[in-house]
Length: 418
Image 1 (cartoon, helix red, strand yellow):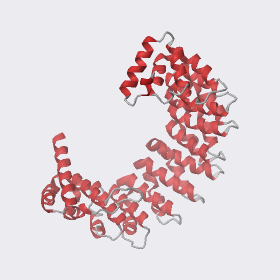
Image 2 (tube, rainbow, N blue to C red):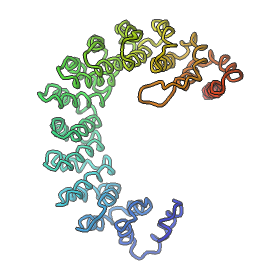
Image 3 (cartoon, rainbow, N blue to C red):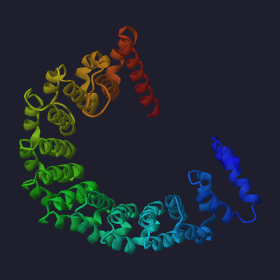
Image 4 (cartoon, helix red, strand yellow):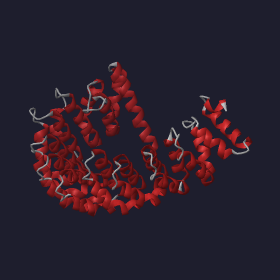
């Protein structure tokens, strides 16, 4: 028994196997171990899962005990057992103890697609008064995936729920259900509730390219009076990608929106749409070179340029002008854009080598540096960067030499893998 608490997982596993072999009543023993404080021991839980349906009655009894201290460990185990465990969890969702109801719902996450049998009970919970259970039900329906399509109407209703967590989890679940949810989400874009419109747009973005049929509706909501609806719509169009090409005019206009997030997501979306967004290049170049523009918007605009002009012919002159910009985020975005251009960025190799020791942060909110991304861009350029990297590996600064050697190694590995 003491070996179950050993730090070495293999010792724990061996102890569990030995107990399973010598115990006259292993189901009773392992349920007692789980309930009695060994809930964090994966070997105990995994042994119970391996026993399957025959331990479900004991787990149900432990879960219904008025003295149960850790219902989560029991419900997780039931979820992992599968179909028989799911039935027990559905019953536990009707418990008089709020914590047990919530744990039972979350246990269904571990059942994955096998929790589809619980979908009707989850829909009832989603429409119920217990907001904690409602929140968990919304999450679980997403873990079931496309098989939970019968829950779409209830999840769309929940986009207007007064509790933000319920709205957010419902939107996430609708995205996980996928293409089947698109028509209902398009209808929700016409809701009188701005929260529902915003979360519907966000969910459509989560569906991705399969939500292409929603593009006309999202183009309309780009003119919504609510800022959040507009920027959620712009983001969604970006995640739909090239299929959202019809939105290029409205997204280009949105680069001048009064809300900074709408402007940023419009630039992001244009870059994701790619070459079909070529009509927006002039507006994006203007933002990229405007020193008075906010730096975050400039970074989005520069990165979008690389997504649109894959050959680099139209944008390389501007990138050359921006490569020594005093704002590190601008320099970082230039490097990221050059990486997207790959071999077409060969004319900029000398500057990229000189930037290898630039330790300024390259991207807002991330801790990667301009120098690190310069190395990655040189790797993307490939053969045309080798001689410059070899020279830097021998005669550059310590950091330049280190990154140059790393770049040479990665280029060599790429060549060998072909």
